Image (cartoon, rainbow, N blue to C red):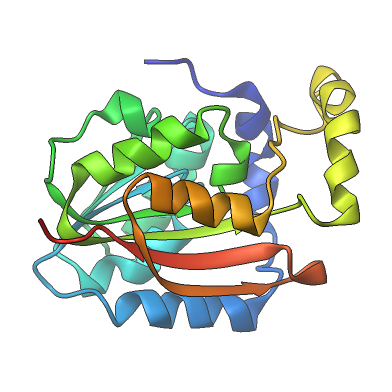
Length: 210
């Protein structure tokens, strides 16, 4: 398993204390997701950060595996879960592919604010499809900068990464994201955008039944 990521380790404490930037949209995402949950579900969230969303969802499902590449983020998540008396979340370090869940073993997978940080996006989406049960859902919220002036961040990203100021960011449009989800075998059920210039896209996609 890869080492804990130093960039996100350094950001963990500040990240955990920063307020949610768009509280109204965040609550809407939680509600729309929880409507699809039931008490017997086993779900997985990759890129879970400090566990805020996993903890919010914990009362609505049976079990959550929460993954992140930063051990510092996970340590904070474990403390928050204890403080909230939540005991059905297992926090572990690694990527989705490293976790290697069983085929068709999960009812839902969440990848929130993480897909635009992945160099192997197509591989990750195919892995999500592999591990979901038929009829299972994939919930994502992704920064799609491809049609925004922020697409020029790709010119600054190598310098920012070298200086330790920003992580890898991979630029895509909303259309690209949706096409890649469909190519991985998903049917799109919910799609809306929000945030500055509407660049954040919330999607609920379903793996079809056989």
